[in-house]
Image (cartoon, rainbow, N blue to C red; front, side, top):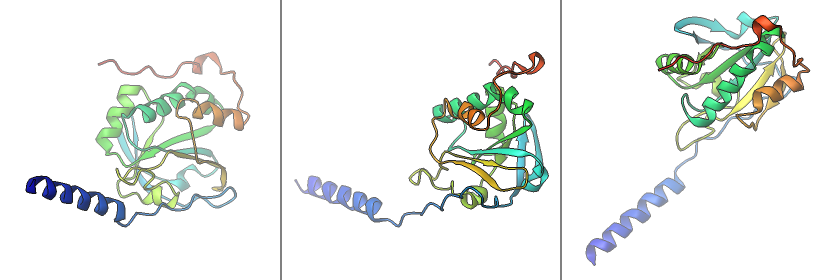
Length: 196
């Protein structure tokens, strides 16, 4: 009986500690019309890493999407939806950038496994996610929330998608931006995923 009481007290203490621990607050989302916060980081494209900053894309419209983690089901669905619509994005002159806290190696594997034709940004310290209000979307796991920003050619937030369906979100953005459904035949097929 004494062991049961000790175990019960231990469970109550652990539950109370989790329930009462200080929460890491999520940053506020950016609003349409605000200037997009500048960032400088590493970008993974295929097997290559290169330095990149928001300023590198001045004059181009950017789709910056934050996602929790490479290789999870929802994140894979979302990335593959961007991949499948990528020809339409490229044809319209839109830049697609994914961002999560994963390592460069995890990003390379994710890109290779799913045939992603667009770059993924490294954000291990959550500086970019914090600036864009995406940090700590899943506090218990320390992962970013799923959110997308459309940034215009002059660096202003054009559209905010705070709640997305990973499987339809990429097409929703194209439709909202009025991007045509037609793609020239040479661009119609995205890169196929690598086979294992």
